Image (spheres, rainbow, N blue to C red):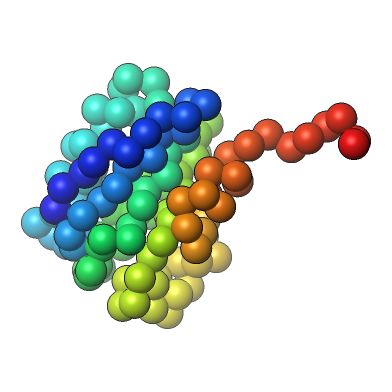
Length: 119
């Protein structure tokens, strides 16, 4: 698995995850994101468009990351889940816990503050 920092925009870090998320690669994801969190990033979008499989350990890693981000006042959003990865998370009903978006652009919009101007 590889992590690629796609961009940082308005304090939102977009990270492309490439490969699968299982017992071998989940620690890599955790370590890579921990470095970014310690650098002060607390809004992260994980682009899963190139993630082809996920194990129960990978699911646990996403839940732990979600909880850790909430404790820090931040948030993590998942985007562009494909095929079996989407089905596994939906079947496990994690789509009600984790914020999942059809693409990175929609996840990015979800981080925007609400327009309080009323117009």
